[in-house]
Image (cartoon, rainbow, N blue to C red; front, side):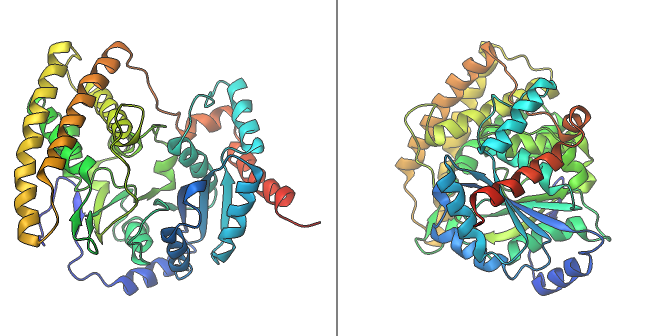
Length: 404
């Protein structure tokens, strides 16, 4: 445990009084209502983590509304999820992001010059949910539906720095130790063995302030964060696996670092992706998207040109730094009695290095933008868009879930 302050404010959990946080958020509920967005795949329904999350959320009465951004392929799946979430006692709404009503609205936006029809995945679902959540909320928290170590502290820790009038932060990012305490194993390889050495590599090439900012986050890829509704309305987010990184870049561009913080969420574990064998699957797909997002940040924020020589240098230096980190993590794991397979870790670095080479070449030849428009622009084209989406959700429930 340490008390070191990063480039952004770091809120450590030395002895946080969680009950005090909850009482204070409750006090501010009328003036500064808070919503929670949970993006979810249908496949995650009825997994043990989600059942526990719902049970714990029932104690979080300081949350005004839960918005579930659902990816489901059929009416049967949608109805199943609506029924499943009846165990959640908090006010909540299921947004069937792939449903015909929502899709009809999305295609209608295209006629107004806002084309989201080519976007798919978590980023798009979160974008839709933001529109609904910002209708009645001062602050919005976000977290995934597969958190094994979830507790009632999570939403309170995320929301408190945003709603507390003595703090007034605009953005708060969770960080944690990706340790499986039952299996005594160290996880979080994409961050440990890819993002961190890649950021060190990029900073060695450029001292851009935004890279210093990225390095200040203790877990860059955390999907647990909170922000004000006003900020949520003014940022553009990626529609691919670069969501968390792209979001941080947008936060940097739309506010000052004095209004950004991160908070300790303790130990954390969730479902784990397979490595994959190429750029279209598993962690390789994730790493490729994240790398492309970082390349876009470098292009926008530095004078570095995306030449073949520049990308080759990144590939070589990244691999060296990644291999150096393996020795350090091995020492950390050994002293803590954690399982650690050095050969397996080396294999990950080798694969990530190949992804860097291939994704870099792809980006150099086609630096296409996967950022969706911000909500401010969308509302300038369709002023009642948020209301349309909300009414579509209500209509879905009435048509598919209510008995006549």
